[in-house]
Image 1 (cartoon, rainbow, N blue to C red):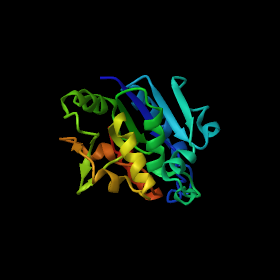
Image 2 (image 1 turned 90 degrees about the horizontal axis):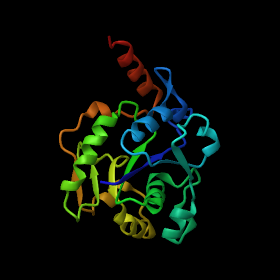
Image 3 (image 1 turned 45 degrees about the vertical axis):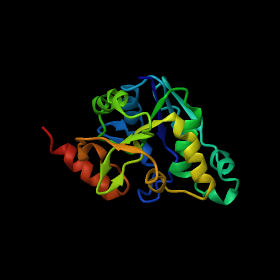
Image 4 (image 1 turned 180 degrees about the vertical axis):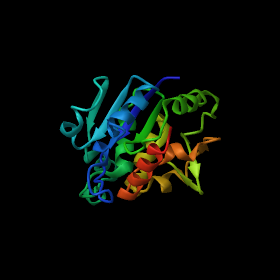
Length: 212
């Protein structure tokens, strides 16, 4: 199954108070770690960000960049007011990644998942062939909500997402709620831990320091 990967790194990190993609976790920059995890699944990985210059020096050489384009969401919507001042948001980043895809499936992951394992993603990737042709996404689901930036999307859903944005949609949860999405069974919630606030970083640091 051919898969390409996109890493979304366009957030403002407002709750963290600093760029969380550049935070060091066990002597490794977070974005670099996420890139290496994605490269364990596919050798076609792109980072979608408004700031390629900020991350180019730390990204593995095998990773390419897509400069976040606000028109990717504005063109779909036909209205500039759907483009937030801080960027195009996850819905726009995913759309841009889908539009750039040349494979049937794309792996979409956020840049703030320090515990994600390549072996887990490879296992999920190998399950794609068993899905119904109507399934547009294969994602973890927790507490009644999808984890939209840690899973796989069929490139053919580009049209549906674009149409959703054109009607004013901005929430991936809202879009996924009306699409045929398959939940990934047997997920490990610890791997889905993401860094949003300084307290999350404290929790992760304490957990890592307690390991033998």
